Every structure is written in structure tokens, then in C-alpha cells.
Length: 158
Image 1 (cartoon, rainbow, N blue to C red):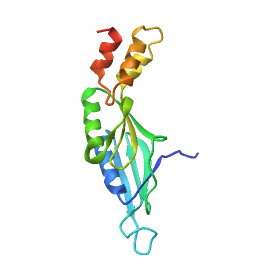
Image 2 (image 1 turned 60 degrees about the vertical axis):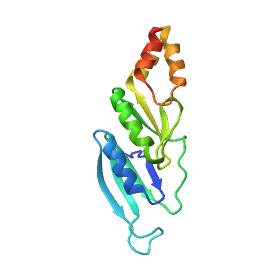
Image 3 (image 1 turned 45 degrees about the vertical axis):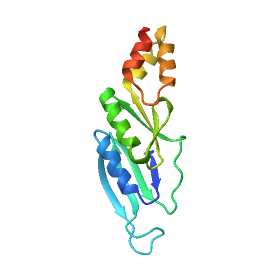
Image 4 (image 1 turned 120 degrees about the horizontal axis):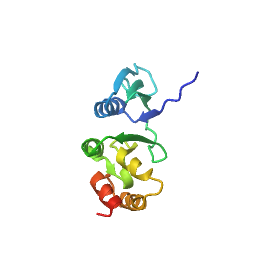
């Protein structure tokens, strides 16, 4: 049976990114990082293949000459358990040149898009007949980093 595995490309910073990502996301690990030898299409020592997991989800990565642009069409979605986890990931991924984006999205310093979304947002949005659901959505639309207390306040009208 075939597997679908996200494959990320970097312009010389694959190993750095893999180490950062696996240090931030729980249940993550690096399986291997293989590097180019002399005579390859990129400088010696660059990553030819990195095999790693983020919370059990396999990923691959490599360095390519001149890189490929990241973008919003693909993002790494992390459902956080609480505000502390949301804050920790947000701070680490926007540090050193990352960019905050609307509605819980951000771009890390490598140009990849992430969604750092508290599970609480999904809970509030899944309430089918709640009058507070739209208020919580409206509050989220005004945020960059998602603030759970502000979602709950909007939901309850407080």
C-alpha cells in the first residue's frame, strides 16, 4: 500500500528546520538526515534526504539549489491542547524572521505556513445550534494568534 508523505524543500537549511520542528512538536523525532557528498547538484553537506515525524506524521525534507517558494497553499496544522502550548509554538515559529498571519496562521523563518489552532476553536465551531458560534468565529477572524479566553468570551457574550 502506498503512503502519502509531505515533502518539504529548503535552500540549505533543511537540517536546521527539521531539528526545530521536531523539538517543538510533541511525539516527534528525526529518523535520519543524509547529506550530499562531493559532486552533487548542491554543495557538499547539504541534506539529500531527511526522514522525520511530527506527532507521528511522517515527513521528508531536502535542500535544493535556490529552494522553492513556500506558500499558503500547503500548511502544517497543529491542534493545540491549551493556551500555553499555543503560545509556545507561536513564539518559537514566529521567532527569527517568522511572520504572524490572520486566524491562527503564521509563516516560519523558512517560509513554511503553519496553522496553530487550539482544539477549543474546533469545539466552539462544531456547536450546530449555538448562538455563540458565529460570535466565536467573528472573534477568531480578528485574531492573529488564537486566544482561547477571547473565543470563550465571544461565545458566551461576555
